[in-house]
Length: 124
Image (tube, rainbow, N blue to C red; front, side):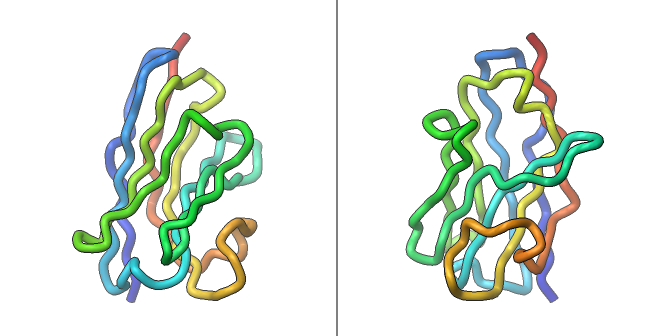
């Protein structure tokens, strides 16, 4: 079975940086889509960034130019480099896998496997 484990969350000051990692097992990340999503209390989970098998990427408008999604196929690991953080980036961040074709920028219910989430807190 697919198992995803996020790490790297924590606290940062506004304007700072955090790098998240997601290590996959039971699945080869060279196939299909992977993505980062985030959720705050009382709000729906939202897409942050996605990456396809060919390393093509998509970003939410709110993080474009500040966040970078990447993956290391040899180590089966997905990353999210987050720069110029603001308090609005405070959330639980999840990595996910979509085992379907037809594009990666899809709503959360189109993703099949999820990590447990990692908290990122940005203070002003």
